[in-house]
Length: 299
Ligand code: FES
Image (cartoon, rainbow, N blue to C red; front, side, top):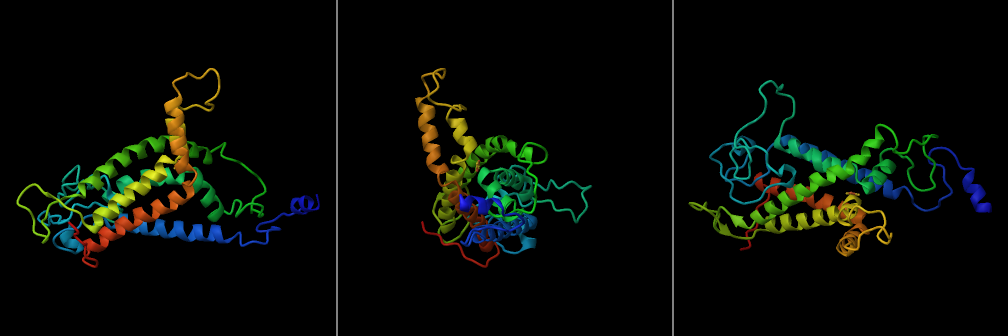
């Protein structure tokens, strides 16, 4: 009772009876998410470096004769909506930048798709907790005073829009199929082991980038399949498995729900691991495309 009454009297931003280093988690979250946001925005802004091509350099990147020498595609630009250099990954093989858009306005194939995984993560239940604490200090941690005295919840604008998470989930399931396809394509090379372009078609091969792309897709899948909205979907969109009115053919749904829950138990870990792998996959391909790193062809 003494302890409860002591805690009950605490008020004001940052005031707490906690003696542990409660601020470490929000601080690391602030640093980690800020670093990813800055890097991701910068990388998408470049509008290049998403493939490894014969000639390096920004001018050469969009040269239509500058062919890809590795089958990789950065996940920041996948699916590749358009490409000025006519990449075989591109859905539209030309520049689609509107002529009326001012030159200073950023327009890149990365910006056309990054909004969707960005909104999926932004509205994720785990990330909400993380950035409410780290960026808004609302509250900074459990049993630590917050700057506001009122509580709105997520019942009105703008935070009620967080409920759109389930719809972003459907879009991301499509992205997962496309990213898986890109990872499979990373086994089909346009060059031989000596880096010489094959006259036509391609050949099976594995490079370090292939392994990185596959690991990235697996980590993204572990994050996505542990999503609360995915659990609800695969479980048959029910709130109760044992209720008598539910049909009997729920066994499959229950099994899938249990399977999704395995990933959900570590959703925070998968959120961070997949954030790292997706950023590192872009970094690896970008560094190789700039000629700073050299990709290792294994098979
Ligand atoms: Fe985190 Fe859906 S709850 S991705």
